[in-house]
Each structure stands twice: as structure tokens, then as C-alpha cells.
Image 1 (cartoon, rainbow, N blue to C red):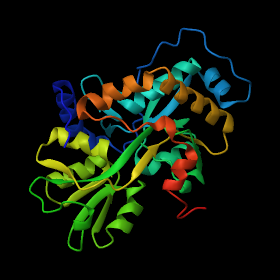
Image 2 (cartoon, rainbow, N blue to C red; image 1 turned 180 degrees about the vertical axis):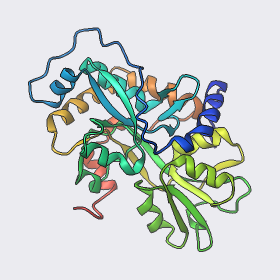
Image 3 (cartoon, one colour; image 1 turned 90 degrees about the vertical axis):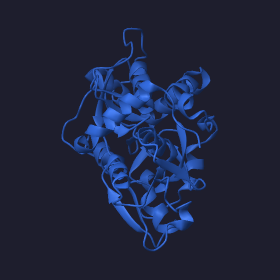
Image 4 (cartoon, rainbow, N blue to C red; image 1 turned 45 degrees about the vertical axis):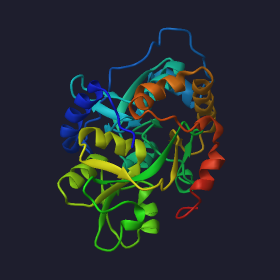
Amino acid sequence: MSRFRGSRWILALMASFAILAAACGSDDEGGSDAGGDTGGEVEEFEAGTTMADLQEAGEIKIGVKYDVAPFGFKNPETNEVEGFDVEMGKIIADKLGVEPKFIEAISDNRIPFLEDGTVDLILSTMTITTDRDAEIDFSRPYYIAHGRILVPTDSDIAGIEDLTEGTSVCTALGSTYESTLKEQAPDAKLQLVDSYSECYELVQNGSIDAVSTDDVILTGMVIQDDSLQLVGEELTTEPYGAGITDGDTEFQAFLDETIGETFEDGTWDELYEEWVGQYTGEEADDPSVMTREDAYELFPCVEFC
């Protein structure tokens, strides 16, 4: 299998994950001072739009994960949040001419954070699904991940078909893998936790047999512990979208345009290579050819609509 490379990542991630399990789910918003160049000319938006309101406030509050390299993780050396989702957030903030404020958003609180105004935007490895769209709205897809299984290298589990009665598998509460595992591994014991760093600790200490989530998240775990490996075929296709308040069509159109520009001007390719490609050695699935409607077809309504 492909593996991340690079001493900078290994050192940062080992230190980061060692402290993040305790930090996840805390009340600390952990705002970052990092941001792009907002000193240039920016578009002025019509009064009453979310974009104009954000410009008046001078900042955009963005929910990201703090323990999911390479998309959102807190660097213990700088105390800054880094990763692919973070950089996408900075691009959006730059286009608005405001500062990004990053707030920790785990899988289970992403939608509540949007609904109660804790954040203005979610960039937190969030798969676009029809059920979620019944509660919030999404941008166009900006990344495509795939579901996989992670186990210790000495495990007899070779894929989803081996998650049978007597085996246990961990994933995050509020993730798409709750339903995926109930459907594809109905006899396995499903353990739901708040954050993937908790799953990582549980599989390390032998409390559970396997972890299931997106391939890029699992590969981040393998960096730190080469006694773990990804096994089996891809379980799902997971198109990530930026989450926004339900019904905000103007903000949705702004995000669609901004994300589309990253595809067209090569910025997206640069981000992929910096945060994912150079470590996995794999080419990305092209999110520019997937629509929201395509994503909904992958995850049709189950619960809310």
C-alpha cells in the first residue's frame, strides 16, 4: 500500500496525535492567527448577504477537525491548525477579504455548530449526503475520499467481509460509517466515539479489532504506527463538501465559484500535492467532475427526508 513519507510530517503528526485525544471535544475554540493576504482588493457584496455580513464582521468562523491529518490537525509546535481543509478555508477567507477563525468541529457537532451559529462554514472532512442536506446545505464537492478498513498488521481481518460476529470496529459518532458498517458488517460490534484519535488509541491498545473511515484519515494513522495497515477494497466513495446554513443559496453560489476557481487555476492541484499526493504517491480523484446531485445519488435519503 502507499504510505506517507517525509520526516516533517512524521514528527509533527506523532507529537500532535499524542496530545489530541485529550483535547478533542473540549470547549476551547482554538482560533488560529494564520491567514492569507487580505490586503488586496476584494469584491463588495450586496448588503444582507452572508458574504457582506462576514466582511462587516471582518472574520469567518470555520469549523475544522483538530485530529485528522492531513485535512485538519493542530501542530503542537506552533499551536496552529494545519491541513487541506484549513487551506481551503484560508482561500475562502481571502476572497472575502476577512480573517479565518478556526474552531474545532468533530463529526457529531458539525451540523449543530452551523445551526446555532458557532461557525459560519464547515470544512471538516464532511461527506455530502441527502440526509445531511435535509438539515444544511453544501457547496459543490471539493475532495473525493474512499472508505477503507484499518487493522494491525498481524490481524486476520483482510476486508469488510471479515468483520463478523466476535469482531469489533470503531468509527466516529455522526460519520457516514455508522450506517455503512451497520449495513456491510451487521454482525460486528460497532464502537462509536467522538473523534478518530480515540479509534486510533483503541486499535493500538487492542481494545478494538479495526477502524473504518476515509482512506486519507486512516493513512494518517499509519504514519505514526507502522504496525497498522489498510486492508480490503474501497467500501464507499465520500465526496467532501463545505457545509453551510440551510437555504443560503447566495453563499452556496459564492463557495461553488470559489472552489471552481481552485480547480481552474491549479491551486487545488497544489494543495493536493502538498497535503496528500507527495506522501501517498497516488493521483487524486477529480472532484471538479462531480456535482452535488452525483453526491446525493451515492448517499440517498435514509432518515430525514
